[in-house]
Length: 193
Image (cartoon, rainbow, N blue to C red; front, side, top):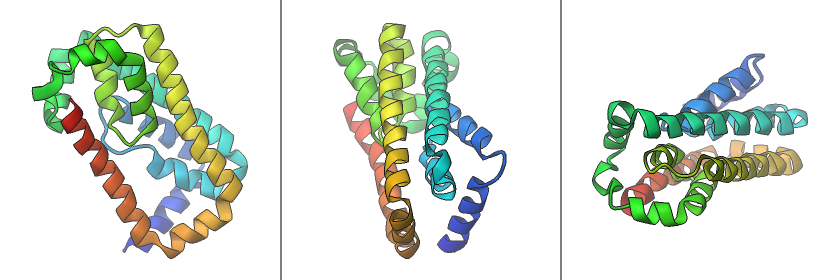
């Protein structure tokens, strides 16, 4: 079953509209969607290593623009959209207690969340709610998301064939580690907020 899903994802990654799909997923993930763009970014780069930098660039730009949408949700639409998203992920109870820490370390929080499996959407919404300086938010987002996606691109570009063989030979393990990191990001977020 996993092999069929993997093969399907790899074939999708080579599709002519894959960049548009990646941009859409990257944008939505930064404001409301729980699945990170890596699920498409990695197979796209593995399917077309010569386009690694373009793919990482599209992912970065769309993610930062999605982060701005998350900021806007927090700033303008917290009660209508932001609160329900935070309630859905179970973060609303600790959200207000987190405010002072956020205002003290906002740029670092955005940067760390942008680099890690931590749910970036929570931070983009929080940035808007707490009115983090928009320039600070943008700089931290561009640096973090760019570093994250370009690091993945660089590793896959340089080590592409061995990594692809490793993934294909250890698909169950790779899937498990990915899921643990994804769920772990949400668990860490729950206890930090």
